[in-house]
Length: 106
Length: 118
Image 1: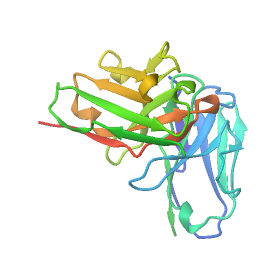
Image 2: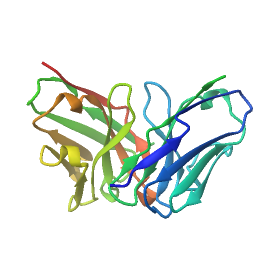
Image 3: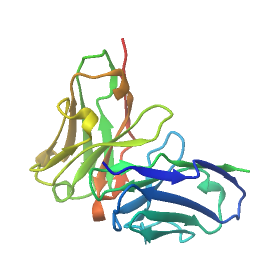
């Protein structure tokens, strides 16, 4: 199976900060990489699919990039509602998620 | 509006069985791959299984192969997960999700909690 890692596992940031989360796959997954946001007690929400495509209704401060094995999720200006846990997911082969990155308030 | 509503969770003893259901509405259910994803308490997301539009292809995570069966009834707009030989490590919130482009899960239900304990 393809293993997914994320860094950092957690970070503290302030409203207005630029935040970058990295996701790495154990082998090439081309662009089969997606990002989700999850708030406590809630279902995950798709933010970015196919590496860089913004899901309908998601604010443009979210962006994704990368290819092959290395990917990033960037939040250009962190808003109060963005404090959450973020997961990457690969669907190139048997589906796996990254371990998550928790973004909390500094 | 797309809606996915899971049901069927609860407390079950180790070795027991449970059948989860997911009622879909607001879209043409028969046109989409569907998935089950779970989340153990305080842990991350784990994909469990998915199924093709007509049910002809099904895939599972290794840890549930031979114990869980995913199925669907397109006439009833419903997705199911039959879980047998349940173990404590199957304790989780189980979400059903609709797959979209490149199999990204673009709609999720609210989840149903399965607790395996004696």
